[in-house]
Length: 457
Image (cartoon, rainbow, N blue to C red; front, side, top):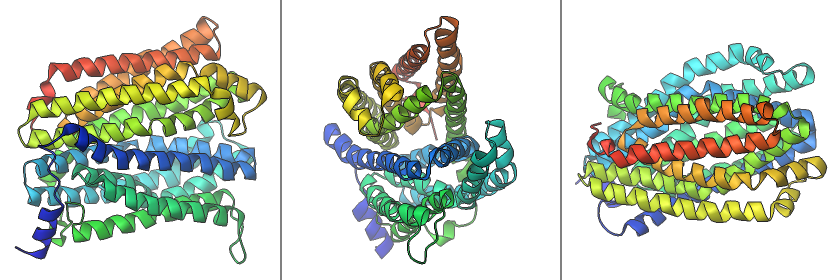
């Protein structure tokens, strides 16, 4: 046995037997911690930019919203690569799992190039369409150009992390992302405000900190994958494009990309609706959005655990076990979401106050917090069940349910309740909660029908 084969065999984690509860805990804890750290970074990010002034924070928020819309076509690669690797690992097919890893990497490179060009050439125009002008436009464009210059690193990090999770080793992605986050914590204040020979770069410094910290993570991924430490390994022999394998990955990824594009665009439109009620409501909505990202960390970890368990157990011809894993993860998500969002509802005043909310912003946030109990529990359940379908390769249904709940329920209902019935911001919070509940019910019905058990990848 070669050294590479020995490493892969030693690191392979069997998720097709043993305690499902133990496997879910082992897989979800690192991913949940990782998500919590990234969400916490967003809060720290807002703190440093806030010290530069309102224009800086608004410029970066607007640029990141636009970036998410533009990169949506490649966001599904994480699901496609993870599902393919998990299926081959479950079938004990190490060669094709390794090949899928390299082909996912090549797809990142190929898709990054046109998106970089699009962001650099049309970014300023898109920002103007979003309403940026004057100093806000100048800072947003400056930030956006640097972010798109380093787009490969920023998209490689989450995509290859998903592939490593698909192999059953989220603890490696946690270590890698801790290193990336640590770099971000050091670089952002240094580059934003300057120190000694390092000049004060403002929003440009924030952009460079994001790119460079992502590059640190990608280097860690490269080392891990070259040595095969996390159950999959990249081989130079697989560096040439394999169109068959690429298409198998894209067949899963493309519907997911369309699904990711939908909420990204919806969020941009929803922000315009929220802003119609004034800056205080928009600020409260933005702050609650950041808190929701942090509080959804347990559901995020459980959703990735469900996707990995479904993929590997279907590869091992164990669909019943895959279904039990999803049910257990979804119920766990429901319980944990009810706990953390219940606490947010009860203690909204001190929690929001920690982030400087006061006056009308605080009052708006406190009034909205109870509605986020429905938002959090419904979206947590939907995240787990949707990821399980994605892990099985049933991404088309996931896509259409997601699009339908957003465009047929969330946007029109939020507008109708807030403006049509004149409920004001309360109508938006109600629309959000109801749309997530509708999506969760639809995904559950799809999952119960069981078509995902027979999908061939």
